[in-house]
Length: 328
Image 1 (cartoon, rainbow, N blue to C red):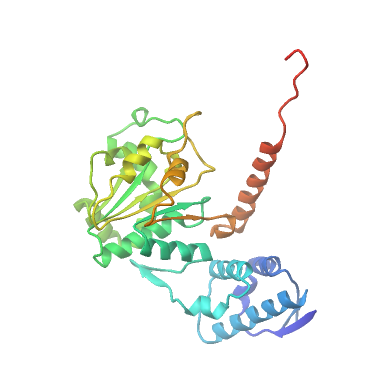
Image 2: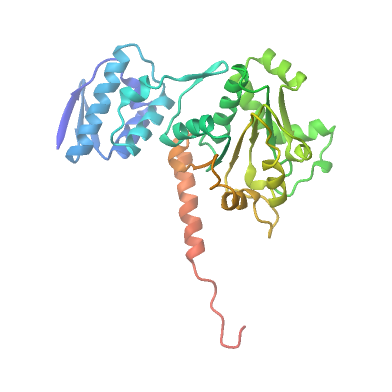
C-alpha cells in the first residue's frame, strides 16, 4: 500500500538531523518512505501506512497550531506511537499537558514513564528497575521537588550507596563530604536542572534537601519526607532492609536500580533483587520495570543495551567446556 502526504513548512524537526528521525519513523512504524517535492510517500502494509499517515498529518496540524516539538521530543513520541498502535499524537502532546516540576515542565516520554509517575502519586513505596537513561532517577527527583514545593512533604532525602566497584571512601582525599560528593553527583545534577540555584543552595544549607550516602540512614525515622534510594542494586540485603524500615508517617519512598549493573563483591546478593522477591507483592508497594524502549538518551543507547542483553543471554546459554572421562 502506498500513500502520499503533502508536507508543509515547519515539518523539518520531524525528519531530524540527517533524516535520523525519518529513519526512526520507518523503523518503529514498519514502513518505508521517500521524500519527493513537497510530499512524503509512505509504503508498507495497510495498517502501518495508515498509522504513519495519521502521525504525519497530526504532526503538521500541531505545528501549524503553534506547538514546538524538539528533536528529542519527536523521537520520544515516535517510540510511544510505535509501542501503542492506538496512541494519538495529538492526545500525547495535548493531554495530559506537561506538568511543572520546579522550574521545568516534564512530559513522560514513554508509556512506562507515565505509569511510573502515576505509581509514585498513588503508592507510598515504588520500585523502578531498568537500564540507565530511562528516567528512573530524574522523574523521581522531579516528583520529589513537586511534592516539596506544594508542601506535601517537608523535605527531600536522596540516598545512594557510597561505595561502588570496590572503591573505599577512606582512600579518597578530603573531608567526608568531599569524599561522598562524587558518588552523589547525578542526584545534584537532577536538582540543579529542576530548582533555581539560589533556592537549591538554601534548601541544602537548611537540610530541607539532604543528599547522603546510605550508611547515614541507620537509626533514623523519616517522617514527612520524600526519600529516594538510587543505584539500589549496589545495596546488600542488610542495607536494603535497613532502608525500607526507615519510612515514617506521611512519607514516600522510591527505590531505583539497574540489576544488570551490580558492583557488589562476588557472592553477595543484591538487596534490590531480594527486596523484589520479599516485599514487592505487599499492598501499597508498586514495582515497575523499564526496558531499552524507555531510554531517552541518544538513540544508539537503546541499541547498545539490546546488544548487551543479546550477548549476555547467549553467554548464559553457551555450555561450559566438556570434561574428559577422567575428569581432567
